[in-house]
Length: 107
Image (tube, helix red, strand yellow):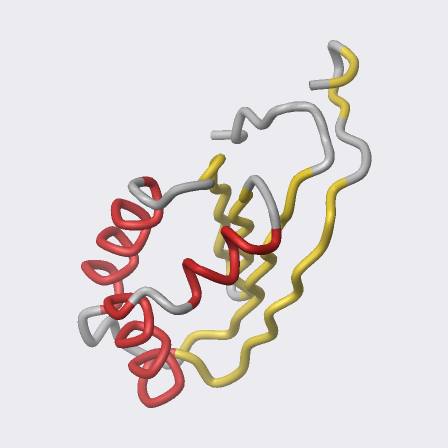
């Protein structure tokens, strides 16, 4: 599903990853992290796709809200598990969205 976001500006955290073989608790943790992120102040939405290359984009009201999410203790545990077991490679990019539009115009 495409996230519904407010008029820009807002922050996008783009997490691109290559997974290791097997689940090793990944699906359960991914679902929990999405649930937990939705409860965080400043969370706007999330989009995710995986077909070999995984891309997850989370949207936040500003950079401070995105940075605060990075430091949530349960998220820190998931980050470490990702480095240790789930990802063979990954990249995190943080950007400010300055324009957003679709078939019906700006949103």
